[in-house]
Picture (cartoon, rainbow, N blue to C red):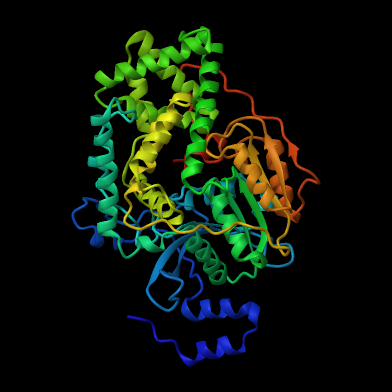
Length: 540
């Protein structure tokens, strides 16, 4: 049932200037954020899912001190702003400086995905920023539509069944094996379409950008600052395109190519991850004295694919087969700090027959639970709906066969991750044309030159769309460069957040040192340890 709008709302629209009309409409429909203690309330998602097999917590989950939570109601369909509403979950780490000229306003943070919750990374950012900056900002995290504590939260399958290890090998050995994997993709797409036919048409980046502006209004801000990682850079770019006058500061960290949304962007990832995997193999060879897996990249490559073939018939611990191995070692393409753990587990398996290291690492970094399945459902919901995907599987097969010859590490795993889009119930639309407006302030871009998930070449394409942007590049390959241990990158970020200053020209920071070889990776030292950051980003 549609909400009846009172005369006060109508008068607000009539008496507000053009620049504030949208804000007045938004305020008429929804209220501001009421902040309070955090705790997970029972979700409506379980009522929607029925037999999927997910259950909510029995009681509220306590939150760390200094964090407040709230929610914002937004339209499901912005073409019908007074129609059905959905709820977005927010958290806030409030600055200690009073709201005067010294306060820098709000900083909204998004870790990417699409499909990742922004609440944990907001706490990380607030803790990692220098106190003189964090005290002057209200850092806001949010769960985008369909994600986490927002309602409804999308779930399509029982993760315990769908992800049960070992899964079928993601590199098909022939037509019959390929049909099995196509069947899994069709199953997931059909299940999502059956459960969420009313919501999937509205799962777009454009709608998420409009949600961002509703958050701005609910927060009572004329302009917002925004820090987006990975897919979050694309969300920020779309927001800047639609609402340029509402941007105060805009940081893109590890930028998505706006010219490849989304099928071509995923093809581009295959070559970039191949390059990163070979970086890891070369590092392992360089440290042969520790790992004993080969003195050259060719030798370590042979050792890696031999391990993968062996796991196809004898999964480690009955759990880690070739597909689980792909998932685990893909994490090494995002961040260097995991390399010692990966190489150590690999070495102990090959040299001593010890499977526990592989099993433990997979459980820590690549196992999938209900939260991961929620993220996957939203990932597909957004990417399949944002833009058109090939619907003829012969196109996928030809493209992946060609890509696999040059980039065997990720081509087929990446294809199956995205394959439900070939069978999605909602057709892809036309993505927003990302472009700059003269009213936009200077923009800060942060990028690793050998980033695999968001390749450098794509970041240059985004840079060309925004003439006011300046890019700070580090030569390494970590995905997510700010607040990750590079003091040079962080100095640029802090200065920009403080006073809007960007470098006069694009510039380079020295990269982080390569990790020290060890049989095991040491544990993080606390919530501000930069090694935690990759776990918070919306990696695929």
